[in-house]
Image (tube, rainbow, N blue to C red):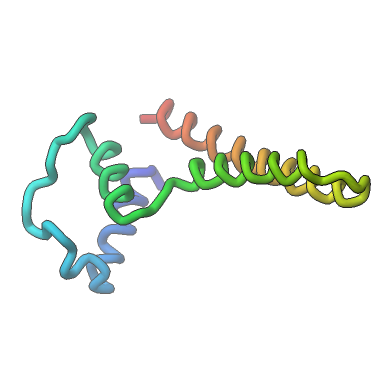
Length: 106
């Protein structure tokens, strides 16, 4: 299934479940504030809803974990914190690769 088909499926599902009822600006055209296309509209809608893309959330988590690691002194605790950091970095890399692959296939 292609990305646009998956997106359309999710939109139809949300419509049938009533999740899109009563949204601010319903029935009005989207504003074209910087950027164009579906991606810009999607990011704008996410920003208005206070939702961050998973990649951004993971970047923030990596930064926070790096601070925790820097403050940890005890060797066993440092090892645990390093494992957490490695896991977050791996998940961030997976998200970044998925985004890059998505843009290459469009």
